[in-house]
Length: 377
Image (tube, rainbow, N blue to C red; front, side, top):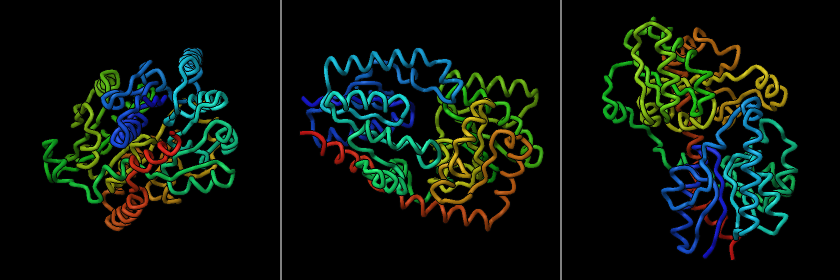
């Protein structure tokens, strides 16, 4: 039996991991997976030694608060793998957690693969030297990443992004509206405040106030807010209650894809959801708020003027970004309405995002599985 150690750090990693496990099992039936996995990976047969939520911490201050627990968990996981070494270890994203683990395992003779390049093209570029010591290969999701690794002599394979394989080139807006029982003529605004509790805490009041601003100008507007946990739903419900005003906000359990596909415009916290919105060819306003200390640290280390994945991939501001102090309800609302009313801009956005879709559509799980199998006897 081939044994693969695998660690994913959040929902997007769980999705990548589940597709990879499925593709690997189709090629070889004698592989088992153990480490830290989310529900999708577990449903494909992975054994999770710890809940994936233990790793879902974002922002410098938030990480510091949970640091002792994260270090203890990482040490326990390392001891587990050293006592019973896997044939291969795959770290999926979660770079600060996984690179340490990968380096320790590689030094003990375990082959290591890191799936998802950290954003060395955006900040902390010097990490590439640490990555070289930690991994036998990087599996990169974006087409501009391999050149950065090859320049430093790090083995790398471009595998594309699984969302580009999953989503159709042409979105079905009418079908999504039918699924969600929405008026075909309504102005639908999808609002995605993030997947973590800390993100929703930062964005809930802002998004509710933005909805209020839009509704004042567009009384036919309906706001869809997909959330994935009871805790994040509770935070958003409290923000609605605190506004003391009846607004057409529909909270959804999941259904982020349907909400974005049905929407005229998307207001989204920076992260993987921005890429999904782009692949659905949606105009969007990218926003983000974090603690001021985290923001000041991040600002000093940024290498690019944009933070949203669609803009990074296009290497220009295709869609607007309103971050930190610029992230006010008035600015976000007006920017979103300006986008919806600019037909020329909407056509240009759709064209750019279609080009990005074709670039990223690479049959990712298959390519990643082939790369992984090349390291196994």
